[in-house]
Image 1 (tube, one colour):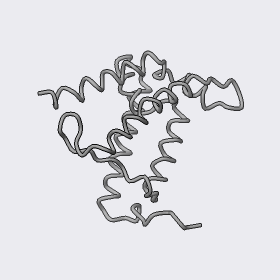
Image 2 (tube, helix red, strand yellow; image 1 turned 135 degrees about the vertical axis):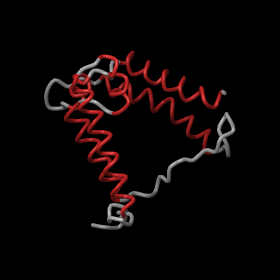
Image 3 (cartoon, one colour; image 1 turned 45 degrees about the horizontal axis):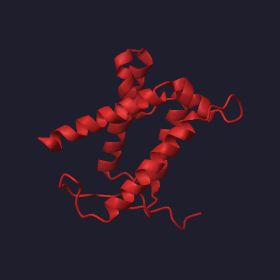
Image 4 (cartoon, rainbow, N blue to C red; image 1 turned 90 degrees about the vertical axis):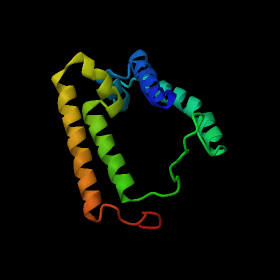
Length: 150
């Protein structure tokens, strides 16, 4: 029961944090990205707080074979930088910069019912579907790592 309920409760905690910090406001995010204009540093403080909390948690996770609930811990490979990672990061950054919304806040914003959120989520779902199809088809999106390439 706790394994089923904990992701839901942690998602609620994450969503509450987004709302309390104001990160569901696209204008605040775009203000952070506007370094040459009316820069708003609030997102930097939110990110700094997230890093301060996550660093000790990741350090602890590296030393444990299982999670607190007994499930396996699968940490990402920090050394592998490949084409899908770079392409995904670039697309995420472009979408985030254009809309001021990333997937977490978009789900939180569904309750406010703006048409832009539905358009964003439709684009997110379509992009995920296309990426899955490209990856499954063997198309060279999953090229070898970029390390050492000019």
